[in-house]
Amino acid sequence: EVNEAYEILSDPQRKFDYDRLLKGDDQPTTEPAPANHRDPRYRPKPPGFVVNRSSKKKELINLMQGYLPHALVSSRIALGCVFILVLDFVLPVSRKTEKLVGDYGVYNRYGQTGTELQAADGSTYKLGKKTSGILRPNDTVVICQSPLLAVPKRVETQSGDARNRIPVSIYGNFIFFPALWLITSTLGSFYKKGIEFRFNLGVINLLLGIFNLIMLLIS
Image 1 (tube, rainbow, N blue to C red):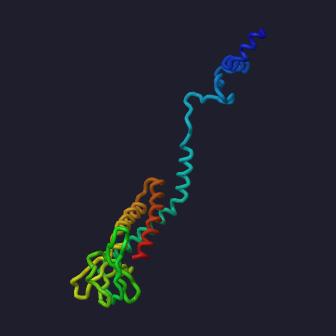
Image 2: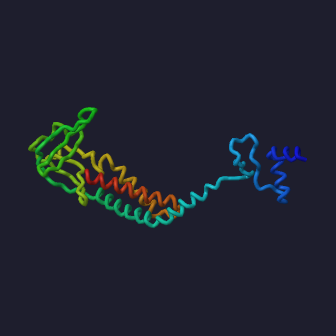
Image 3: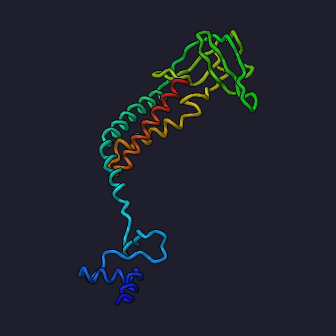
């Protein structure tokens, strides 16, 4: 009997079955640790065990739902700002006459890329190569700018024989940012499905608004 008891105690599977019989359990709730496992506390996962990852996603969705009204406000404010930009872009330009006091080349690591003009009021306008050599200090030019936000669009000579658009502007080479803002703000304001999608649109509209504001300030 002593030898039999020793054999049962030395075999994890037989010991587990013996303990289960003493408890009167027909079905084991846990499995014994394998004899060759390094950690004696290890218990293999029961068949069909699945890690529940949906709870974290539900918590994130609930958090987004709580901030969704703020995201919708962000999208609607963005849509109003884009409407002002579109109106400012399509309306006829206003013209003002300026006298040039300086003409400086614009350089980068690839060499000369354009001309920087300085007006008498202290404003500077970065133009392309097309204007190089045409406009000189003491020349009088016409600055064409948007009517609402006064964003410079192009520079012309008084005779109109030379025109050059201003590329470093929100209405120049960076016009695709207001266009993208128009799309995201429209979707964020009128699309009614998907909490996660509408929340992300609100965040994107906020970031695009900050970037477009920076572009307006440097235009």
